[in-house]
Length: 250
View (cartoon, one colour):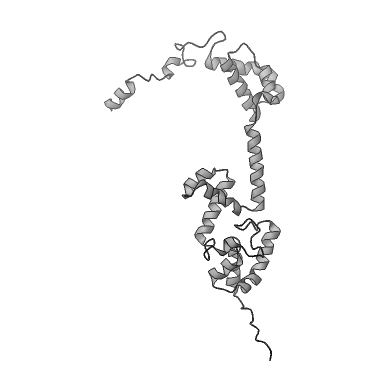
């Protein structure tokens, strides 16, 4: 007698589309099958094209155990999760938001505080990053490390500007002039080749703003040409009662 062979269940186009959508975030075929109340074999047959497409695009991601998602062997971590735990709409939206925050450079502490989890819990969402996102994050970390190790006096442009700015300026005013020139070059307002010619002009401007050539500016000088108030008027007196009297008079 011939054996009774169970034919695979034919799924609707809507069910196949849902399997493809759930395959983007689920950890295992079993989770999809239990969530949709379908047989695992039917889910496997229909999910395979979606899984292969994600693998080819490099967006398949990792299982909670650290291996590739939908790996062929039994996974104790996904087996102990309740059905659909990682595949609800709320969880998908939460994962997407946290991954976006990670890629934006937010700290794990800030992410944890925002979503009400520990910093270690926020760090656990690294497993949801795609290979492309992991590579981009490593690149951003490398660039951040280079920025943190920047030393002004080892920068050729900074050294060139510092050599051109007159040394008769006070230390603070000279630093202001150097910073102004450096910023002007970065913003494209000044060519690096013109630093030597323009250094004196920037130095004079810094002096005009903060001091005279021979000493700091007097607080009794006008704040600017034609001004009625003095430089000293800009300095707040912490012991003054004028703000309080003004508030009481209102």
